[in-house]
Image (cartoon, rainbow, N blue to C red; front, side):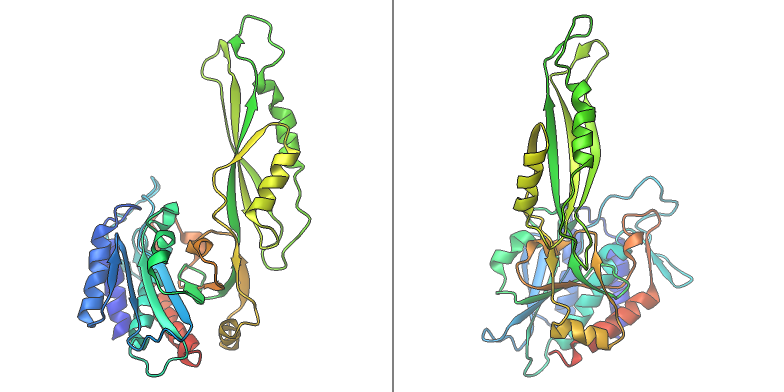
Length: 349
């Protein structure tokens, strides 16, 4: 019964536009779920959160979190992204896979265990906004109003395997400076001609520590911007580097190294999106392994980056479908996901 209600909730959420920073109506719909089950909740901006009935401040707290914001649909869609049609076992629609399936499954899990007597862990459910843009009104901004969190399950599509580590992200703006001039005049300080040297330096960046879970730090040049018209030598050229950080390094260490090795100005946009992980020997992970799930390291970013506690990324759906045209999730993935979540916490709570 609760599984079918969760699927209906997801269909409703898909049909409501909920781009990042405009999630107020999906937040309203999530409120109705808690009202229907007579579960008290709180709301901060477009974030909805609730604690279990027998919450005890002396116990550790397990956060269940996923997001209800979406990216905008891309031009490759051949279907109405807000249609929420079920065809041959697939539920189509924007946000169905990322991360609606995980969100409604976690809400169903929380509801199932809401009145669990004498729990070993408190449960804290948070359906949050602005995850896709790592916004200030996402989980990050909500944390100050939540009880202390000791452990977290972040709902993202993982095929219900256990993502026990997640790479962090640092985006660097690289500024190559030169002397502006008219193209007709001699200029030995053209910043465009310095690009090959900088690209070679970027290509030579190597971090020695390789994670057994996440692999090496990955450094990727993703953008070059320079010059505005054919007869003007620009004063500078800007490059952007995307760095995916394993748990062996802090973001500050990455910043210090890259600034030291590149022959130009380097500025990190932010150092807050750090890598996260949980020990494979943690009882939660061992419980998942005993139920037949495998562990892996996730290359994609989530709200885990906002947390200081051990965290696990886990949810129905497939990460490769996220942000794709004609996004979908299998109904069976949601059904199996809810069943697995409940079984996972059966002995843990």
